[in-house]
Image 1 (cartoon, rainbow, N blue to C red):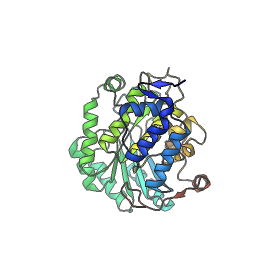
Image 2 (image 1 turned 90 degrees about the horizontal axis):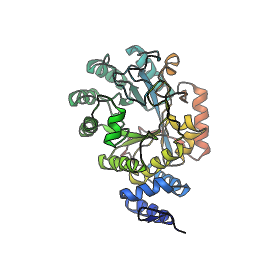
Image 3 (image 1 turned 30 degrees about the horizontal axis):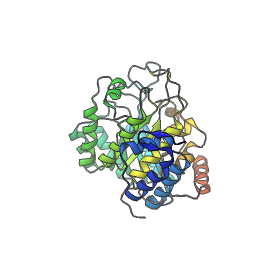
Image 4 (image 1 turned 120 degrees about the horizontal axis):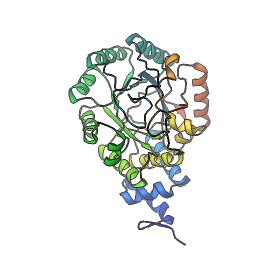
Amino acid sequence: MRVFYGNIAAQDMEKIIKKALNTRILDKEEIIHLLSFGDNRLYSAADKTRKEFKGNSVHLRALIEFTNICQRNCFYCGLRCDNKNIERYRLSINEILECAKKAKELGYKTVVLQGGEDAFFDAEKICNIIKEIKKLDLILTLSFGEKDYDEYKAYKKAGADRYLLRIETTDKSLYKSLHPNMNFDNRVNCLYNIKSLGFETGTGSLVGLPNQTIESLAEDILFFKKLDADMVGIGPFIPHPDTPLAYVNKNNFDLSLKVMAATRLLLPDINIPATTAMETLKKEGRIIALESGANVIMPNITIEKYKAKYAIYPNKTSLNGANYNTLLDLQKKIYNIGRTISKSNGFRNETL
């Protein structure tokens, strides 16, 4: 008996994967099929694609979570401004630079400056931080939300290299229901502004949101393709007890892995992180992701006393990137799956 989704039979998985490998183009129905019935064949094809286009190196990018103060009220995020149960913090500029210097000493090539939308860090402060970090000869990724064109332009002029702004979902009605006083079209416009300014542009989505469909996840992947994103982060949704979505009880690891793998097939040369949320849901989740199309890990080098306070979701399994022993353990795990630690700057267009 043949199982059908739309007009595609379950036995046609090989045919869809072959088309993706040959053309890097799939239609929405074909992507839906991969997300519905994807199995080890999908993961193997994604891993094969990663090896062909990105090689066997894993990029380690040092994460600095510099503020958990946020003016937004997103229903899924523990940093939302209405959460009164979180202890707020922001790193001083000296503390941020201390973390960046530590990253340099440990051999990282890239630092990722990530935080909530904290009005204290205006364009002038951020540009000064960018300039100081760039003096360390580090590649710099920024990720702290929506800004206007001129602010993004100032960051680029100051020397920032990459900007990550996850779309979270391309389903407009779902987006609106989860993001009070935010505008989907403005978020999309921010991404295109970032792209037009010459940043390596990162985006991504949450998998397992309430009322999210396989169809909308397929649209997410088509959006990544249309944007021609340089980086895509796929994270399973993990409910936070101090948010309106605390009631949701799902394990979205497998579906997240499928979305990530399908994204690799259609965008073969981009950088894809094995996200912390995957490790939180499943032991060795990062390694499983690395074997299914991912090629980036972001160890956390935030000052220790602040790490637990950056609680976008509970029980976050952060990798201590400022500890030599944990880095050595990570290195061993990477070597054990036949991979190496990259010595390059990790740009999308780097040749193997």
